[in-house]
Length: 374
Image 1 (cartoon, rainbow, N blue to C red):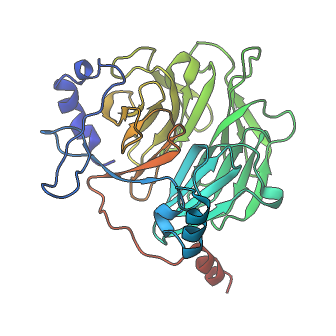
Image 2 (image 1 turned 135 degrees about the vertical axis):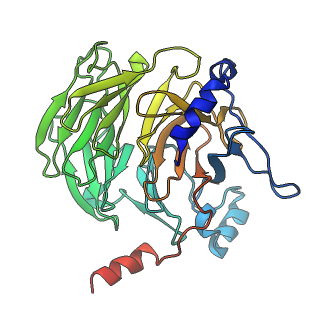
């Protein structure tokens, strides 16, 4: 997201804390375009637009269209939805216009290549199969890391979707829920959520060879400890951030696991949390936190100061309306934001106002792989 720090003082000075007192932190939305389709932007005028709603992903047909065979099958069976749907999405990751969506019901990862206009699936065949894909992360070379909650491991795929590694030995993880990886892939941070009768509320650190390097935190309320941690993300400088769900806060740590800071508490006011689920970090170090009670995304700077909020809680599932937002990702290449809503079985896509609407055009993944092997 571009130039958000310059916006912060204006937004806070105009009384955003008061505006967010209403139930669900109702989003600021503006319609533009005259006779054209309405365009949803945030924040409200007279502030300059920072994010623009772009599209919603629900099925494979949202990117590749509906084939004649699919259309015939849909008409013959009476099924009203075209393409392969998101059955129960949870986590999302994005890198260079490729969007990866973990589906806990169909036990696979949907891959939307927004630049090549292709759809594919990984994680549902052979040794690289996943039982319950939850949090996802991508490193700087495009490798995908999937937290398999039931398998109690992290499954690693290369940029072509080929299985590369399984991280986590029996006993290493109790209830893994999310994963984040350093840019170079040398450190894999796994959130272990623990449980009511467990003190293993922590972050476990591995290398790509599967060696456990470090365990960070235990159950508690003190800085550096956790109570039901759920989401994690690595920032551009290597620091990582953990959504400490039961303590209603976000904690920051250095790459080597040293506690740095925290922000947030329980409540319904601006900058507070009710049911925080996940966190993503953009290239400028701003943090995006989903909250399934508020039904929106709150955006903070690295100091924990609220900059902006996007979306609202609602029952219709229309653009930027959420009932149970879970995973969130920021594409580090262009800053687009991808937000999963498990209830409405969708991923909403938001574009920074400074990012061109046109995406690059490139070859499909299979062609790219074939070319690389020549």
